[in-house]
Amino acid sequence: MASALNKIFWGTLLVFLDFHINHFDIFPDFLGYLFIYLGLAGLVSYSNHFSKAKLYVLLLAVVSVPLIYKFEETFVGQPQLTTTTFLLMGMFTVITLIHLGFVYHLMRGLLEITQEVSFQPLEKKTDHLLRFYIILTVSSQIIPLFIFILPEVALLPIILVLAIVSFIVEIMLLVLIRQFRSKSLEQDMN
Image (cartoon, rainbow, N blue to C red; front, side, top):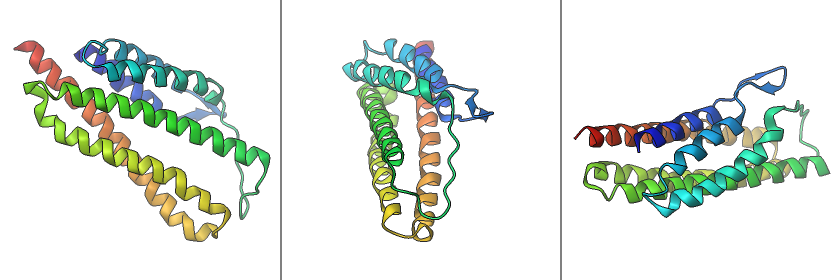
């Protein structure tokens, strides 16, 4: 279990890191998703949720391949309502919802693992983080839609706060995966 959780941790970290050189992602997300997939494969025997999460990760890996190259975005004033704008917004919304499906099933699987005695201290933390993650993800998809209605100045602070909170929650997810790995190592030693 520790090895599988380690793969999920490093895969999630690779997806989380976003460094570009000349518009090319030097840590491609699909490599991170490959690590996550391999980790989930090692956890399938613990919960059916890990098997479901694998499907979402496969979709994310395929969808993330074209995102190795980052297109330059320049907005002056209000964004224009073009077909490209709507397509990009739709694409990123779909990716975010697929990612939410992955995180949901990952954490539901982890919650099933917490039913074992040694993992029970992580149950409440996992449940709270899952609920908060869902609320944050849904609100982060709805609020930017108002950019076409409200002035940019009004939404900028809200979007900034959402971005900061999302960053913190992603780190909390990484820490939680690491805590499960540590508990798994302790259990293996006993």
